[in-house]
Image 1 (cartoon, rainbow, N blue to C red):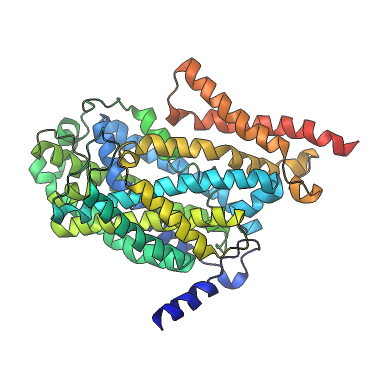
Image 2 (cartoon, rainbow, N blue to C red; image 1 turned 180 degrees about the horizontal axis):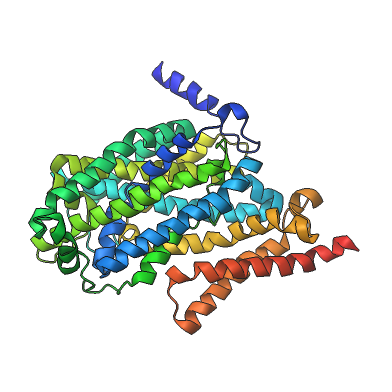
Amino acid sequence: MLLEKLSAHLEEVKEYEREPVPASRWRGFKSFLGMYAGEHTAGTEFVIGPLFVAHGAGAMDLILGLLLGNFLAVLSWAFICAPIAVRERVTLYYLLEKICGKHLTNAYNLVNALMFCFLAGSMIAVSATAIGIPFNIPMAKLTDWLPSGLPWIIIVVLVGAVTTFVATLGYDKVEKFSTIAAPWMILVFLAAAIAVLPELGVKNWGDFFQVAQDKIWTGEPLAGQSKFSFWHILFFAWFCNMAMHIGMADLSILRYAKKWTAGFASAGGMYVGHYIAWLASGILYALFLQQSNENLEFAPGPVAYSAAGITGALCVIIAGWTTANPTIYRAGLALQAIMPKAKTWKITLIVGSITTLAACFPALVMQLLDFVALYGLILMPMGAIIFIDYWLFPRIGLQSNLAAVKNLTFNVAALITWLGSLIACYLIAKTTGLEIFFLGLPGWFLAVLIYIISSYMYQKKWSK
């Protein structure tokens, strides 16, 4: 009976994959504030904050770099992604299909879904590091790539099953889960970081900055790690979610917003999660390093447990879920766009299986900074295509939504833009030595330029 009721509920889940979201489903600012705060005060924060410590970020570089970089990210959500989302009210994938054609969009959706799977997989792995504590499972080191053994794989599979189940229930359940969990997680992050400060030598608030420079963000990277500057931190904070804002992936989320100003709700994630939580988790990791004599074992669960006990470990588990849930949901939408006749929840189960398999490999966590930068860079050109196609083309006499208007399955100009801008970014990196964190900005302008020129040449045959 229970399984029948669950099956009936899943069949009723409607996510408006190929039609605008109706007004009855629109949501206010607070709904998105909770969702963004929950999603971005999450498992990644227990990884990224410590990795800044490992990469030798300086205290002032980190504080100022995060302040400005997160501000630029909020502006990107509010002024680039949200206005198109509330005007079109369709998923990223359906809008791309109207611009690029079904075949090219399917290729993009496949890449997008796989990237989402890998990101969600890293968060399942984060949760698993906490669940593995009572079983004394060996944790991965910063340089590890392969699973540590069968017990680790079993725990990952169990966490992946629960996370996937929540994602199959649809956007409403994902949003409610994040909204409920976010306030508690924020308090745990803060309380744990403040509680351990005396162990690092902070006797009063006047000591904090000196201790931060000497013992937390010292400017000296750990063995085998590169050095991060102010610019690394600024551009990483801005572009770590480039796929979501500049890359337009959050069209699928913000289409539910009543007003475009819901894009500013991303500040709840950027300044609670990507600012406070990154600083807090860095503090916890610095204490872990001090107590373990610079042990290169890297596991968010034990780090949080050493600072806040069972509460800290539980926070890591929940934090991994609040990131993995909406990420699996997005990946499900991407694959569902390829197979529109399939039920979204069934596709989500497939996505969850791929995600869980990926989570078995700790390299996803250890290389998370590079991965999210690469992920955003690969998907960014399609966001530039949408932005220019929507705002500029009607003003310069080029046809918007070309594939839908001309009944095309493949927009050649869009393919040239996607591949051309990525090749250009690769050549820039090879010839100048520019690191991946910095390629998104020139890459976006290159994609805009290539799309305008290639579309002008491609559309000439219809203007004759």
